[in-house]
Each structure stands twice: as structure tokens, then as C-alpha cells.
Image (cartoon, rainbow, N blue to C red; front, side):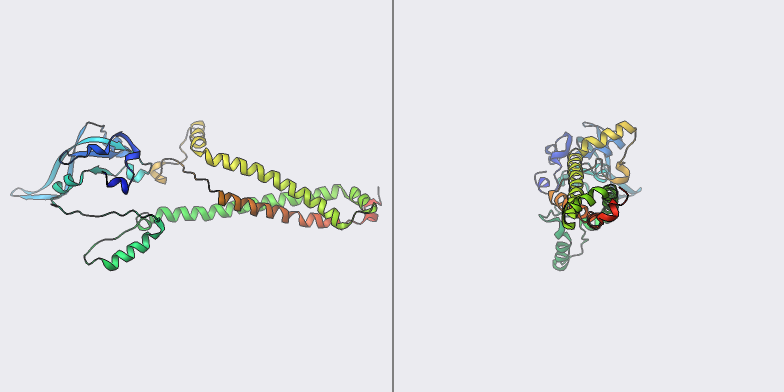
Amino acid sequence: PDLEDKVADFRSHMKEGSLDSLSPDSFNIVLGSELARALGVYVGDRLTLIAPQGVVTPAGVVPRLKTFTVSGLFEVGMFEYDSGLALIRMEDAQRLYRLEDRVSGVRLKLDDLFKAREVVRQLASRLNTAAYLSDWTKSHANFFRAVQIEKNMMFIILSLIVAVAAFNIVSTLVMAVTDKQADIAILRTLGASPGSIMGIFMVQGALIGFIGLALGVAGGVALALNVDVVVPFIERLLGTELMSKEVYYISSLPSELQWGDVLTITGLSFVLSLAATLYPSWRASRVNPAEALRYE
């Protein structure tokens, strides 16, 4: 258990009991919460573990059985582990599987998770025994591929939303230019230059973009920081489960606020809002005072 804390942080996800209960020759077992629920067992109950390797007897092959006592429950929030993982003491496992002082596998935890493939390649070239090597990119390839596809689709969808917002700024300023043609003509006759007229409407468009961005960033940051409260509230309000643990592997919607992404998106959106003001502002600067005042 002490070495396990350096690889997988089960101790901080214990719902009942403790990993310290897994002492040698105690034959205690710690189950995932979903697995315990499926088996209908609680802390203190006893269950029988059947090893896949059997014992050859005159009556045939008999599977090895061992009774364990449930001494704890953990919940890491990943349905795959909560529903299919049980922890026992290494010495007890060696006795059950008759491995003596050997083990069937070793897990490594890296400081940089993106070096997993490189470490696997290095180990494959150095090991001189038959071994199966796998890293997290292989064991959950479909999951991470789905996340990547979702990120790409979200980028496209959000880009279209920003484009629609930019078109709204264009249409708003075009209508403002059409409505204010007489006023523009009067300013021009009083000596205003085309550049100053263009600047007026660019400032108006920039102000619209700034206010919209401020409201959007404030709302987005507030939602990201409170998504663990908002999602359960929506589920209770609608009476449905938005993210099924059996489908999405996770029991809650995680959220991590990355200010670098916020600043990048805000900057790009502000540049787009400024670009959207160029055509209406240029059109306002080209208003002919004589034509605009002819029917006034």
C-alpha cells in the first residue's frame, strides 16, 4: 500500500475503510464502489475469489478458491476502474496464484505523461525477456480518440458561433450607417474627414465587441469554475442523467480553467469584432453629403 501511493492515489479516494487494512496474510480485499454495488457486498462482508488457474486432482481440474474479507471501498470517478478493479495485498496474491516471490506485472508512473510512448520503446529495446508492454495511449485509445474528435468538432462549432456574432456586428453597423446618413452628411459639411467618420463607427463596433466579450468571458469563467454544481442542478431539474457512467466512463464532468486559452480566444474574438467593423465604417466614410441631404 505504501508503494501504491506513489503510483495510483487510491488512498485519497477511499469511501470506506483504508488501504492499511491490506496487511500480509490478512486476505482482505478493497473493491471499487460500483463493483461492490454489483456484488451486493459491504465492508466486513466475505466473498470468494476464484483464480482462473485450477488445481489438477484425480477428479479433474478444480479452480482455486479463497475467501476474502471486504475491508474498504474506493471511488476514483472512472467507471471502468470503479466497476472492475479489486485490490489485495501482493503477498496474498502471490500465495493465491502460487507465484512464490515473483510478480505478473509492473506499473510505472511518469512525471510527464506524454513520454509514455517513448519509455515503452526504450523498455522494449532493453528487456531481454518476453513481456507485454502497454501505455495509457493504447489501453484507452478509443477514449482519447473520441476526446480528440470532440475537441475538433467543438472548435468548428465555436468558430461558426463567433462568425455569426461577427456578421451580427456587421449587420448592426450597416443599419446604423443607413439610419444615420443624414447625420453623417451634416458632419461632413461641418468639416469632418472621412477618416474621422470611419473612426466613429469603428469605435462603436469595438465597444459592442468589448461589452459582448466581457459578458461572455465572465459567464464562461463562472460556468467553468462551477460546472460541478451546474450540471447536477440541470440533471435534477430535467430529471435525466446528462453523462451516463456506463457510456462516458466518468461519473462527473471535469473542468479545468486554463487562462492561456481564455486570453487567446478573447484576443481572437476581439480582433474579429474589429475586422467586422471595417466594411460598415468604410461605407459610412464614403457617404456623399449632397446625395444624403437631397431629400432632407
